[in-house]
Length: 116
Image (cartoon, rainbow, N blue to C red; front, side, top):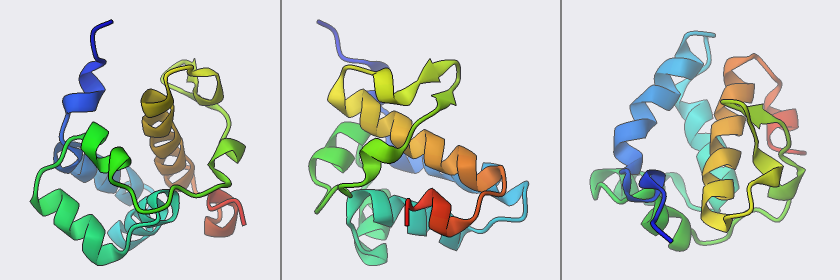
């Protein structure tokens, strides 16, 4: 089975789009970073390093220190696809991240985004 093209896309190439999307609703880069760090268990320094090293999504999620155990609580539709129904594990993780950024951009409270 061929790999989904998202797997080989660099996180650094998508990251500015996450920040821009959040910024349109007066949310910050730091909040985007907080979401990514919560999801993956990486520190802000580790996130910065991954972005600087231009790693792809497959490497980014494979190397994540500790994926948050509450991520299955992330539900909903992104681009017409219900994230929790995506069968491919890596693609589901990417969808989770997309959904979290969507929630941030829609003005949802951070404690709800982080499933706290």
